[in-house]
Image 1 (cartoon, helix red, strand yellow):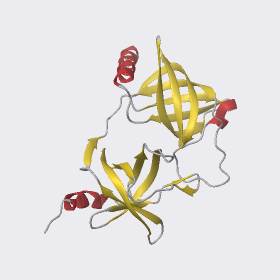
Image 2 (image 1 turned 30 degrees about the vertical axis):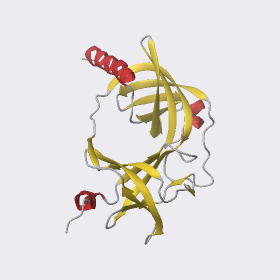
Image 3 (image 1 turned 120 degrees about the vertical axis):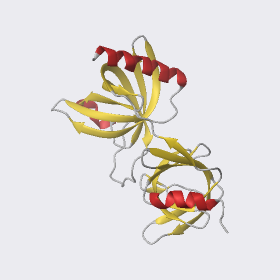
Image 4 (image 1 turned 60 degrees about the vertical axis):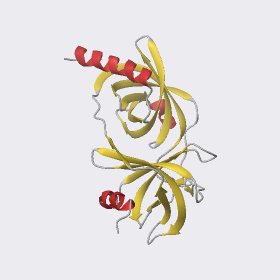
Length: 231
């Protein structure tokens, strides 16, 4: 006899190994954590144990989280509840059960336009791969950046090499952008960084999901204006 989980199992069977983001907004461990889909059970799925700064994130059975699984051209998202911890063949596992229907979310294709916008950045925390004890995390201070291209999905920017120590791939940053006469805050993750020349460094920041409607309208208007200007 088929179970309600059968359809989800068939859907996820081709996504083992996919990137997973688990988020919690409660307690001391509130935040987002990246991991991988490792196994599919009879009525639950397993991901690699959540880790941050080289240590396992404390979790417990019954803990509520939101799971997002990366698919091809889309995401799959659902509420989940931690059911148990176990040791897999190669990595420690965390098993979760779905507390809501797994929803397919179409990945948005963002138009990217060149621009010249001043902005400021502030390091919040680290959301990248597990780091070792030698990793040096940036100081929490504002530093200037110059945005060279923009979309609703993220920005490309350049910074003076003298403030390069404030940047770490996988770090989450609070961004203050000045567009025209408006200014607004966004949160994004530093996803790439490379040296442009002896004086500057290029960086790419992907915005977190959940841009407010007001901010999205300001950015959309600016992007459309830039598109027209660059034709």
